[in-house]
Amino acid sequence: MNSKVSEQKLQSWVEPLLALCRVAGEAICEHYSHPAAGDYESKDDDSPLTRADLASHHLLLSGLESLDASLPVLSEESTPEEIAQRRDWRSFWLIDPLDGTREFLERTGEFTINIALIDDHKPVLGILYLPLEKVAYVGIPGVLARRYTAAGNGNWVVGELATRALQDAAELTVLASRRHRGPRFTACLAWLEEQWEPAVRRSNMGSALKFSRMAEGHGDVYPRFSPCCEWDTGAGQAVLEAAGGLLLGLDGKPLRYNCGDSLLSPPFYAIADGRHPLWSQLLEVNFA
Image (tube, rainbow, N blue to C red; front, side):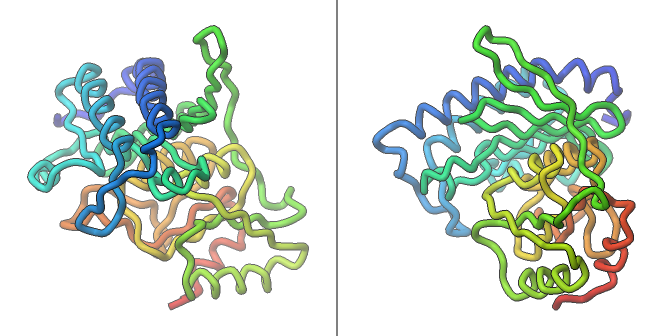
């Protein structure tokens, strides 16, 4: 795997990936509707693992291998032995079979399937799939940014995605996690409220939904200072970048993948309109 994946191949994979997401999403929804939906095991990091996580994981593994057996898969549910091999990979699938397991358990409906293709440490294709809504957000940076909504006849209704310009917004919308905030986020929010005099509105939601909302023009910034992993951000970064946004570390550079021993993502800002001067000012502030 010494050559980059071609743009033509990326586009040819969109339809089979949508079909795969639909199958894995149906499996998740079956578990969501089951009386035992709240059953789970605790992993080593105390995060929950449900039957729905595992069902989606196995379906995605099988489907991605059928799509291209030469590309390995790194999943949130991969074994430690499988994870140890990934440092030698240049191109691979990075997936979270059920992003938002706690939201799944608490019945908020705010969970997604995340699929990203990482090539040379960058996400070159991303899909965020919402199983309950049967909606997919697909991004190939520099090529396409689209929302696919399942139609009753088995086809997809397709719409274009684009982030919004901040100067066109009457208020600045800050997207935030339902569960992960803390003093750095609070300080960042206070700073934004001081800088943006018209109005600042906070919108809370779980999982990678924040990336999809921003990609369709419903948010301006998503500050994240609490820990998350690369499979939480890879697909969202591809979708956001394709729609015209940015996902930047606190150093102002786009997030990169599979570069170190840890799979933890650094603190970041997801930004809809990177041209606005407010964000260069934000990157100069230390909220530690």
